[in-house]
Image 1 (cartoon, rainbow, N blue to C red):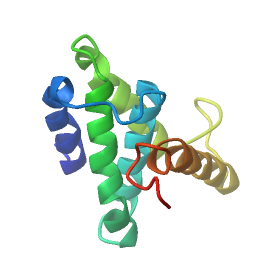
Image 2 (cartoon, rainbow, N blue to C red):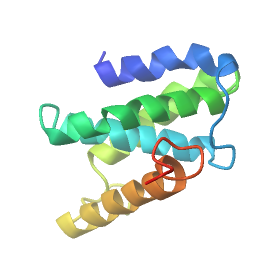
Image 3 (cartoon, helix red, strand yellow):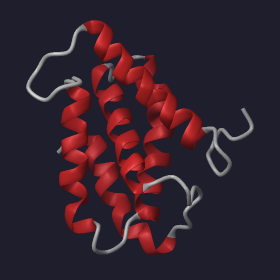
Image 4 (cartoon, rainbow, N blue to C red):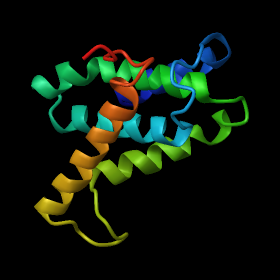
Length: 129
């Protein structure tokens, strides 16, 4: 099992112990941001991106745990896996290969959503930036 998946799975039992710092940010978006973060780390595991995204990984893992209910835990692994597969090979239409410009648009759009709606929002770790 990959280290990123271990971080994700080990946070799930914390759900009852963790306050949700972003109550208006949906669980699905938290899973999307976690998958995006993991895929970015996988793409450059020894580079600057991995080091810069480690705190994102911890934050979004905890956010998924905080937003999850016991019923969610039964399907979280599948939802996360589906999102992660998408970010490993993003495209606008299923079964098609995205152009480099489309991949850039997808990844940039997701990064902006994760940054502005979660990381830099009130309750996020970069709210003051």
